[in-house]
Image (tube, rainbow, N blue to C red; front, side, top):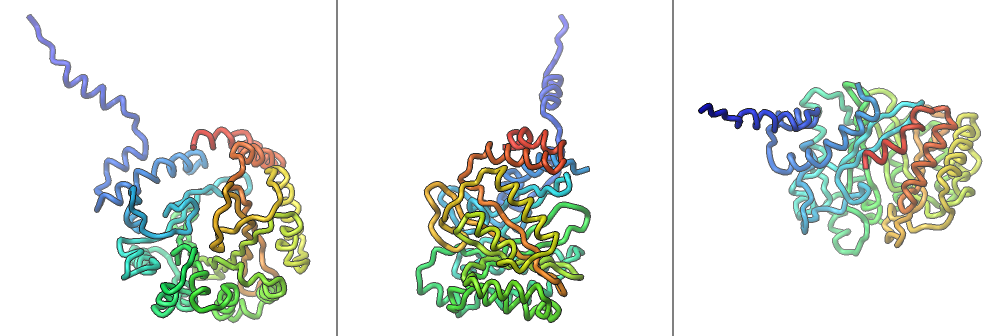
Amino acid sequence: MTVVDNSAARVTASKAAVPTTPYTVISDSFDFENEDQELWWKDTAPLLLDLMVKAQYALPALGPFPRPGFQQIETAVPSGRLFELSVNFQQAASTIRYDFEPTSYLAGTCRDPYNQIMVNQLLANLQMAGKNVNTRLHYHFQNALSLSKEDIANLQKIESDLYTTQHIVAWDLKGNDDPLKMYLFPLAKSQAVGVPAGRLVMDAVGESDTNIQISPGFAMLNEYLREKELLENVYILAWDCVDHLPRIKVYIADPEVTVAKFKDLWTLGGRLKSPTVLKGLELVLDLWSCLGIPEGVRSTTELGQPEQEDGRSGLTFVFELKAGSLEPEPKMYFPLVGENDLQVANGLATFFNRLGWTEMASTYVTDLKDTL
């Protein structure tokens, strides 16, 4: 009688049935320092891999992973998460972006109530690892706009609906030395010292570089914010951590979601008249039409207002400044939370087609469904 032991064959077959992907290979090779790092990897890596494949591409600083019943800080990252993935479309090409709020177990405690410690540690770690990270603007703006101990003591005496976020960091995945982008949230500082956030931000921007302070673009934006009484609406300051001609970006939130308000913001009340700005205005109005966004006045959660029942929010505008710029470069974030996802996806596909991005238009809706 011949006995055949098939156990080895069964084990081999079982292993072969598990698909091998970059995610599984890298996961098997990692020796995580703690459970939080492993949980962040399992939570974010599969989606990042899927986005990178669809975009045709040839995190220890996240701190503790959110658990039921444990909410460490009120983050400004959308949906309350510490990590966000997105895709940027330009010239029919896709670039993966990710941003997160560096944090640690001290964040939200009496030792670091506004999560200020970890961002400096992250920058130091990046520099020690040989990454090209210019920290000049970071420390300038941190000194001007981050909360002091006195500011924190003032805030603890009042009720506030503002998130506790001070900094978010971001990268575009373009190459081997992608520049770090930094975002600072000045509203808590504004509340603590009783000065409009826009005044604090514009003063800090002017003091960061004489060539920016004397540029026509800086003067235009400063004049517009004061004329339209929008200094209270400035809620983010961002910059590139690079050596040469960093971009500095001023973010403004506005509750009025109307074409008239959009045109006024995009042109700074008629001040911006260059062909590039006017062509951009034409394209964005076309995109607005494709997306079918209804007009109206919205609650503006970015400024600490309660969220509407339908989740909708207001406009977000960005004005990009550079040393010597003749005018700021406007950009707009469409308020899509609360809108029908399929309607938005179809609207984007239609817009891509109008731009001549036919391949992207033909796959966008399907790719989005597969990813979600």
